[in-house]
Length: 335
Image 1 (cartoon, rainbow, N blue to C red):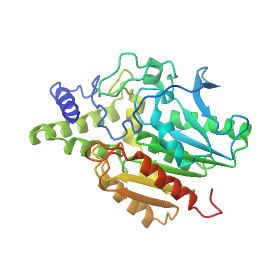
Image 2 (spheres, one colour):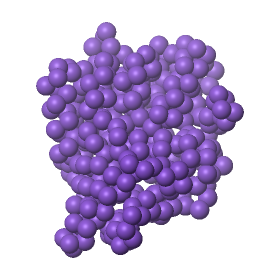
Image 3 (cartoon, rainbow, N blue to C red):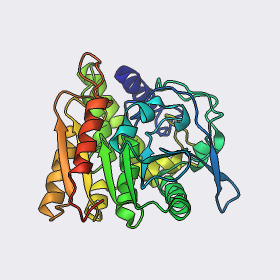
């Protein structure tokens, strides 16, 4: 997959001035899908947006007859798929808070009718145009905030806990930084301070020849610079539009963490080649030096971006159990 990334960047480099390519960065990017798998869909609900579109969300109640005491919000990664088809949420991540009601929210323009497809790094032809035009980090934050507010009002939840992986980790951090939305949060394999550093790490840790890596790194730097200087409304790269790319490259995740006041657990795999574990460690050290004692850090040396061992053995279940233990250990004054 990493060779596909480098080949795409090299193709862009060979066309001067065209750093905005149709397919530049596949699943190796730092905020790629963190929860890949397929499952049967659950019941879909709708919440209108002010622009006339609607948010598709899914609520699985622990007890069908009444709301639970807590709401667990699981935030998916960056692929063009409906979260309703993702079995990792129900198989693993629901155990982070097993007696809670479970909320997942689809991205703009996506609902359960979109067939599941493994992310192979190519742009999928049926990826909804509305998603490509409107999906970005701020939009996801607004959508989650609206749904959480509605469910808090309807269900009377005493606490809300968010957990997200990859891009979902960044969105979970945004929810926590907003204040008043969640009472605790967990972010795994969400990258370091700057998205650009994570992408360059992804290229550098690949198995392509050094000269190709160097050219790919130069090409992506050029793409990022060109996008910042002259955004293109028709950009589609790795199933993302220009709004997503601009926000991903501009977002300062360290500054985001410094605004979080609720308990936050950061989880990082040491064998992650999609984001830079070293960049994450530096970011955590910086926020600790800034006095943020509400942030805990757990490092898993042998696990990759999908929380798997080198031989592919999944460890998401064990990590989810550790997340649950962290939540149980929070002081009584915290959720």
